[in-house]
Amino acid sequence: MTNQMIKNNLTADCESCFGLCCVALPYAKSADFPVDKDIGSPCRNLQEDFRCGIHKQLRKKGYKGCTVYECFGAGQKVSQITYNGLDWRKQPDKAKEMFDVFPIMQQLHEMLCYLKEAQTLEEAIPLQLKLQDIYVKIEQLTYLEAADILTLDIPAYRVVVNELLLQTSELVRSNVRSTKKTNGKNLLGAKLRRADLKGSDFRGALLIAADLREADLRVCDFIGADMRDANLSGANLEGSFFLTQAQINSSKGNDETKLPYTLKRPKHW
Ligand code: SF4
Image 1: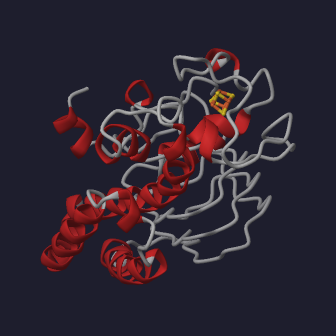
Image 2: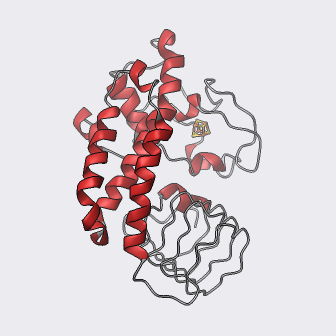
């Protein structure tokens, strides 16, 4: 991938990254990981070439958490743009700084990803100028020097972005009618099979292990929803937005599940 492509890419390109998520981030022994790992220590499965040694067996080996992580292209941006292609093994004196920059870049890229999607939604046309304006500002931050990235007030940017995304969501969902439309946040294990939930607001909702089989989930806002093991078999999610591949990867589904056209059907479904 060329640097120009890396600059514009908001999805992970592991080939252009120095395995940053596998080093910089910690994980804890749980249903998602079989062992503990500290911040800044390389995962035992990370190879010398920065590839994962068990990539095709992650779920089988107990590393389910790796299959649901999304860096939104931050890994290759930090590796190839912020640090000009010099990896943490070749410049160990920069390693800690690089690992600190990575999660900040991940948050910037996540915001860019949602803002970019918001600009594609027809109903959000009245917000286009504001969405473009903040997109450009956030994108500029991703090209700062590492030392400047470390000083960014990310929560303050999140407040501004979040307000615009909320307004976008309202515009997109306001005219959608359905019998069970909800903005419920605690839907852990909820029995919602075949429910007509069109236009619902699932922002930050706990949908863990919810039964959503054959549910109508069109035009719903899924930003930040925890969808681990939610059953989407036969459900229709077409037109839903702020839904990421990582969220879909963490859920269950089947060949009958209808997804927004930007998302891929996970191999484990
Ligand atoms: S198991 Fe593979 S993908 Fe997961 S952290 Fe380790 S090297 Fe990275």
